[in-house]
Amino acid sequence: MLLALVLGLSLFVGALAKDKEPVVKVRARIGGTLMLSIESGEEISFEVDPLNHPEDTAQTELLVITNLPAYSITALFSEFVIEDFNYDLIANGKFFVRAKAPGTGEGIADWTVPKQGEMVLVKFEDGFTPGEVAVIEYKLSVDFSVPPGEGKMKIVFTAVPEI
Image (cartoon, rainbow, N blue to C red; front, side, top):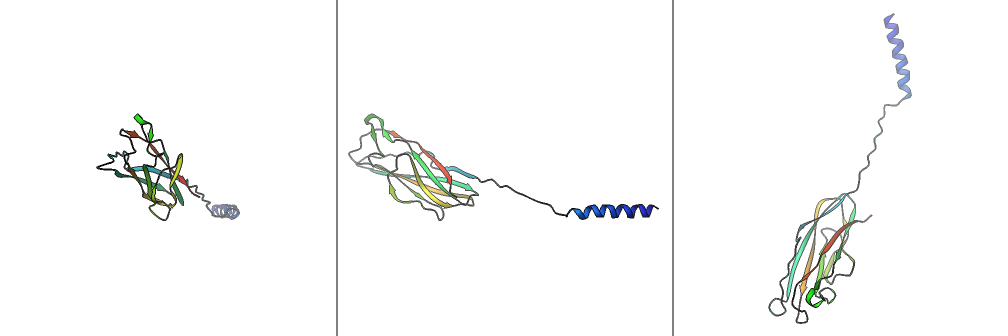
């Protein structure tokens, strides 16, 4: 009797199991991440004079970590003014920038005076990287038309996804 009950219960459970397939459905959502940080060159100091040292260069290294297929790096330059004379080094073509893309992206190969507003420094750089460094270079070149004094500027960098 017990054997008949176990056998009958097995057939009943087996019939129920036939209606459901032994399948597990799995779904994953992976968020896109794009991180930008300054590795070196957080503060730049130029020491120039028109006679003995008319030109100086410096650089900033930006670390990019992303799981996106491509990205660009933009920069927003503030005014670079010698306050006592209201002389803007950018507007007068004395400050320059260039950028090196770490991979297949496009940087700025030649020294270029930064544009007002946001400027693209590296574009369509390949992503999917656990960390790569883009190098941004600066040059200050003065002559006797530049008045003496001190100028300060801020540069804000942004990494932008390219899809």
